[in-house]
Image (cartoon, rainbow over all chains, first blue to last red; front, side):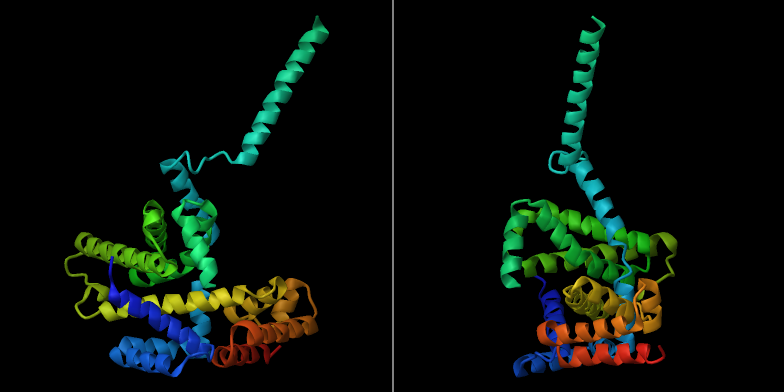
Amino acid sequence: MEHPEIGQSLQAAEFIYKYLCDDISEPEQRELNLWKERSPFNTSLFNELTDPAQLSAALRAFSNADVRKARKKLLHILSSRYPMQFPKVTIVWRIVIILLSIMIVGAILLLGSILK
Amino acid sequence: MDDINKQRVSEFNRGNQDALNAIFNDFYRPLYFFAQKIILNEKEAEDIVTETIMKLWELRSNFETYTKIKSFLYITAKNACLNYLKQSQRVNSRHLTYIYLQPGHEDSILSEITQAEVLREIYGALHNLPPQCRKIMQMSFIEGKKNHEIAKQLGLSLNTIKNQKTRGMEIMRSKILKANLLYLIVFYSLTRGSSS
């Protein structure tokens, strides 16, 4: 799956992050400038990411995702599609169930011997 | 970081669930942010990202590097978003047109990917701070809260908040972030905290 344009977008992201960290080399800065000039969307994005208020707003939106709920949903789908790899009953619960079963059987046997 | 990612990829290839969890933690937010911006529908964006990660899991043995995983995730999410828009356009109205489906708007989609990736990096850097420091920096920088609001919410003194913010800046200066990003954070924190 070769998609050079995605590769360029990801590389631009790396350069912008390096720029923000003041860690960008001269060749990388040249590449970043070329990327900015390539499209008005790129120029506008760069300006947005280097503006404190806009960056903060974007980070706020970025952090809004409900990751916990999404993880639960993913695990639910995985456990229904791959029940052997993603069992719904975790190992801890398996141990608890086994121990409880042993205790119940033991209690019944003990009760039986007392009643005799 | 490269070594960690290399190890993560090899564990992921072998079907390790912790590696899947780590990839999920790393990419759920940026993919959701990206999908939500394209299709403007939270529920569908959630479904698209979940399906994208499911596809990644199904093809887990095919990826040699973390970059390939990253590219796959964005390409798959992008295609799913465009399919959703095309379908939605067909169902809702023949006259309804979506900007991202217009010819020549490929660049705008690509710049959304770039934005999601930059935010992922910054968010990750903030998350590398010690817990209390991170909480305070997040409340200040991401949630836009003022110092006295943070102090009240966390039950800490105003001085502790100021000290923790200074500590956060120092850690970021020494370890993770430097000049420009630090400037942005300092600038924003000062403007938010000035009225406290």
